Image (cartoon, rainbow, N blue to C red):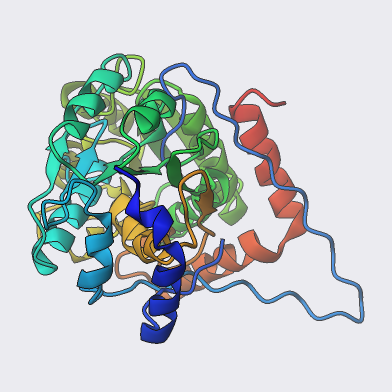
Length: 399
């Protein structure tokens, strides 16, 4: 079937302009796509303004449209198989119910489909890199019209799959980035500035709650973890140079962010050695670590979801480092419909408060001010951007 999106692109853009429904936008998760080379361009250092020039204003974050976009007629254009409804497929590298990064995308697909009267989404989760081609092929064969791929770690087969299933619209929330592919629309972010704001948030939390030692609980020292850890430490020590953070791998290589037994054992050891703050850069092991930290009375940060501070889950979350796949999808979907993000192109999210980066639950005024300054710095401070570019380059083997 000839793809309807291509035929009607001009119509979609015109209608969206009339309806004024497309969110204005400017513009970690995951990398190491099953061994494929993932290039993350190191940003160039921003030039210092001239004495007679004003400081550049930070670009605004994309606004988040309502999940009911009133686009039924336009979304019907995605009906690749002509069955009269829109069926979204979700391909997730981790558990669909991890309460973290992967579930955020699943929850978005379920809520969006329900609110707009579409078919329930079909979810394939716990996909490993080795079986990604078969798992996503099986998903594509179930009559889906759009497939949302939840991480670049399972993106390697997409060059072949997008050719094999050209009528499906393929979108990847590819975090650190995946090489542009003709049949794939993708959205990325830059992990280093996101995690610089994370470190500042954690430094502010240590100042408020006491202690000087933190632990970063991850998987297995992957490239994007190195970027996240080193940028977090840089932000943490910008608050107080005496603050320290240790990285601890808790999973099997590669992409095992779900080993609750290892993660909780690592946190227990870290607490015994004096840690008063933990960062759970984890998937399925996120909540067990959060609960243990709560039981032990130490500060704890989550990685990924944007709703941490509003949860009533019995965990005393100190904050979250947000790179929420559902929040991202909610913003890029109107851009896809409007022709601003097409297959073969990439949209990069800025680092901005309310979109991604460090968030504190019930922060003190001093902590709030520190975090606000950090967000401004990652958009205006050329020297800082140069440092963060170096952190990214080193993490991905570029220097």
